Length: 153
Image (cartoon, rainbow, N blue to C red):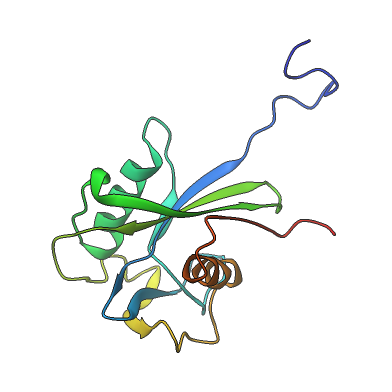
């Protein structure tokens, strides 16, 4: 039986994959304030982006980190710390990485989409955070490597 059996007229299932950077130093995490993106503007998130295809999740994270924050991270220096499967439409899988080392000082390289880039204490995160990112940080701090979010009960 084919993978598409039972899906007449619907085509092959697809989901969106994204990579997120949990850059933590001295008990603080690097956050960015979203603006002009059309998604969760006015809320704090982390450096992140979609996989473009033809690249691994770690390669995508290294690319996005350089594009958004000017930091250089080798893909081999990114440690997977959490995976979240979100039941939104379309479905998404989010990979959260923590770097073991990096080069450079964070700088806002996308001011049209990022109103601010700042370090926040892990024990005093802003209230206005992208909800699933705040949840992922909580999961990582609790040692949970996998979670599911936004699925009907």
